[in-house]
Image 1: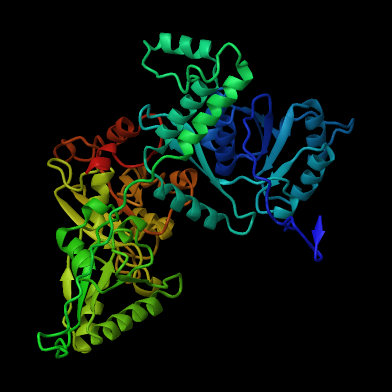
Image 2 (image 1 turned 180 degrees about the horizontal axis):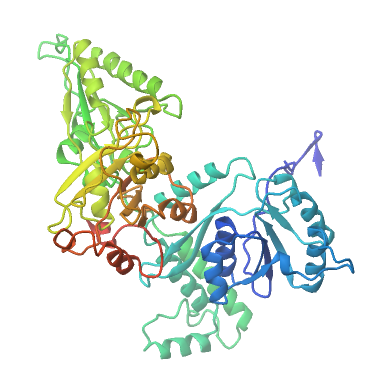
Amino acid sequence: MVSNGLSQYPAPVGRASLLLTFKGHRNTILIIGGDVLAASRAFAALEAGMQVIILARGLVCDELRWRADQQQVNLTDWDMLPSVSTSPLPSAPEESLSAFLAENPSISLIRITIHTVDTPALARICHAHNIPINVTDHPALCDFSFASMHRFADPSTGGQSALQVGVTTNGEGCRLAGHVRREIVSMLPKDIAGAVRQVGRLRRLAKNTDDEVAECEEGENSSVTTPNRPVPGWRSSATESKDESSRRRMKWAAQLILSGDSPQTISPCSVQVPNESSLHNLTLLPPPKKGRILLVGSGPGYPSLLTIATHNALMKHADLVLSDKLHPAAILALIPETIEVCIASKFPGNAEGAQSEMMDAAVEAARRGLTVVRLKQEDPVVYGRAGEEVLFFRAHGFEPLVVPGVSSALAAPIFAGIPVTQRGVAESVVVCTGVGRQGKEVKLPGYECSRTVLILMGVARIAQVVDAMIRNDSNSGEGLQNSERRREERPYPRNTPIAIIERGSMPDQRVVASTLGDICEALDIAGEQRPLAVLALQGSGDTSVLEEGEERDEERIRKWLGVCRWVMREGIDQGWVEV
């Protein structure tokens, strides 16, 4: 039906994806390549129930070799493929691939992670066999793509749940997709996976017939109430077919799920408006309000770690809040709606401009008599540039009040279960930064067995940081007196324990723990990290570290990491949910 030249249906707009979720039972995926990305895709396919074949040439990462040893994947060496010609010379890669696909008709998807001159030819062979493919960094060759995925853990069982979240930008920005996915995950409640499990159980109960539900109830000691039995006199259950009963139950379940009351919200405190008229009906003008500026630390991000002083500043005193860009939504959500909030327009390359913009805005608002809360992450003076702002505001006639906050340098290791000091392990702590002003390199402290080193803002340059820590300048030809040296005194042993904490204290916190020698590879396996992170040297947990010295370091590392070279943990302790 067309009216006035316009269709009543929307016109399709291209460049979108047909997002599907499917279980890969009875399907096989061929992954061409042996790098860590291939291992990541193989793991995703295994969790979907697919058979996985790895076709690789040359080096294969440790994870894929381990999974092959465990018979989780079929690892095939490309050079061992049979020749398809009678010539003594080896077949061309595309010929070998074509023969391999002909011998394995169960392959339904292909993922190519290698980058060679043969990649377009290999893609043409896959298309010739009518098999959908995905090629890394070649969107024009791709028939499908992998979304940035997160699978939720079930808090009651500790295992992986049925709930997954996936985000795709259709090839326009993979890193952005990962950022959006993290934001979505951080806004969802921690126990949402348990809710999905309960809803699934409810749907199964609702879908069953009365007899099946009765059996289920009997098997569970009648602990489950049968959903929505027919009301006596409304319809006899004998005249209701099984299909009708199932549809009625499913409709009841859908109504129950979709009509739940929304959680109660706390309304902002009402603003008391003073009476501006006197008994003689004379207009009374209040004295001009003197503006002031508060530099307030909001802690590492977990709302319960706000100090009372910070909470009062936001809830009782603020007329305007000027916030850093990366402040967690959970903190900003506490600010009453009656208070204006301005977010800094900080992005790579604009840090100085955003800083000046915030300081100018604070002075302008204070001159209008407003109380300005300059909300800083963590503690304002621990690499928070609060000193620069204090001097700026003082030069413009305002003496700011600095309200301290909990620094992630100390809080994040605690959330990760890492003591920064411990008797017999670490007697002192050094806090430093991984990047200097305007991106310049900084000089890191030298190695001391009894000292914990906390490096803020170090993940973006993790390779350079690790190189500076373990490099032995005395053997590099540069000399110990070289003024460009990036580390003081002794180099760090390669087996020094290290933990990288991403988004410390947040619901999607991630900890990657390894040694200096393996941490860069561990990060490649773990995936992209956000630039705001804490890098802490972790003790082995053995309180005899200082007593026994460095002789047993290798033994401690093996005891700590086991057969692996790194460990990764996601989320925070469930006890924090109620704090």
